[in-house]
Length: 159
Image 1 (spheres, one colour):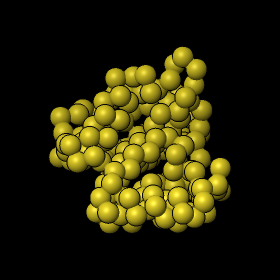
Image 2 (cartoon, helix red, strand yellow; image 1 turned 135 degrees about the vertical axis):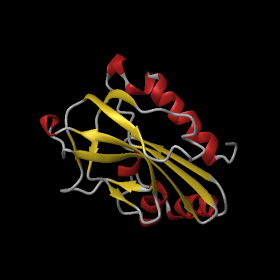
Image 3 (spheres, one colour; image 1 turned 180 degrees about the horizontal axis):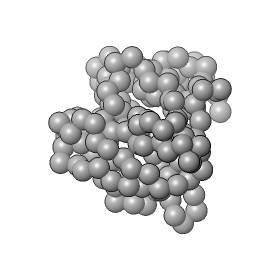
Image 4 (cartoon, helix red, strand yellow; image 1 turned 90 degrees about the horizontal axis):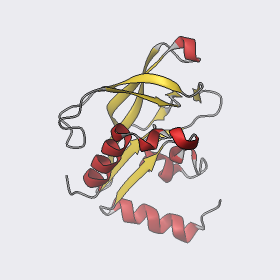
C-alpha cells in the first residue's frame, strides 16, 4: 500500500505535535521507504538481519517496571512469533524483552518486544508480539490485551 505524500506529512505532523501512535507485531515492517514512520514505530524489520522462528511459547520479562504502561505487570509466557534482531530507533526505551531460544531458530538472547518513545511531542508505543495464527491468536491472551490497553492509554496520555 502506498500512502500519498500529503497523508504521510499529515500523519507525521499529528504525531510530532502530540498525537499517540501504537503499532503491533508486523506494523513496523510497513512502509520500509518512509523514514519518519520507521522512527515513529521505534522498531523496524531489516531484511537480511531481522527474522523470526516458528510460533512457540517463550518467556517475556518486564525490563522497565516503573514505566506507566508497565506499572504492576509481571513477566509472563506467551505463544507467538518472536522477532530476532529488530532494528531499534535511537531513544526508544525497551519496556519488555522476549527470550529467543536457539532451539526455536532464535538468538539465545533476550530480544526487545515492547518499546516506548517520543517523536516530537507524540508518544509512540510498539508491541512486537501479536502474530495472528487462527483461533490460537496471541492477541486473545490476557497478557497481550493488558499490554495493548496500557500502551494505548499511555500513548493517548491517559495513563
